[in-house]
Amino acid sequence: MPRAEGYLARIRPVQLTHHGTFSCVIKQDQRPLARLYFFLLLVRPEALTPSNLFLLAALGALASASATVLAWIFFRWYCSGD
Image 1 (cartoon, one colour):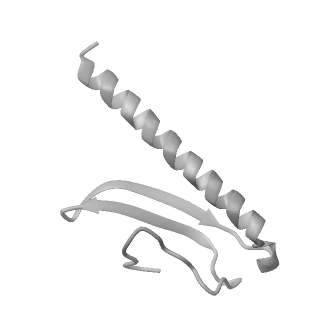
Image 2 (cartoon, helix red, strand yellow):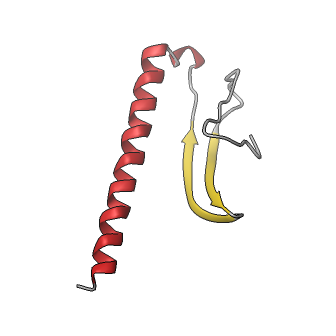
């Protein structure tokens, strides 16, 4: 979905044609700060149960938090001059 704005992008209704690589770009003043890629493969649309959606959201949140912590650790290490 090109040009989705805000904190949340949804693909609704989910269809079998919605597959492939999607990207999310975080920008500030039109300059890209981060880019994330997601590969979506829907074999069975009925697999998107509420519990599976919750697990996917939790996995996404954990991955995002992990990336943020790793970037913060690297930034602190890089700026410390060691």
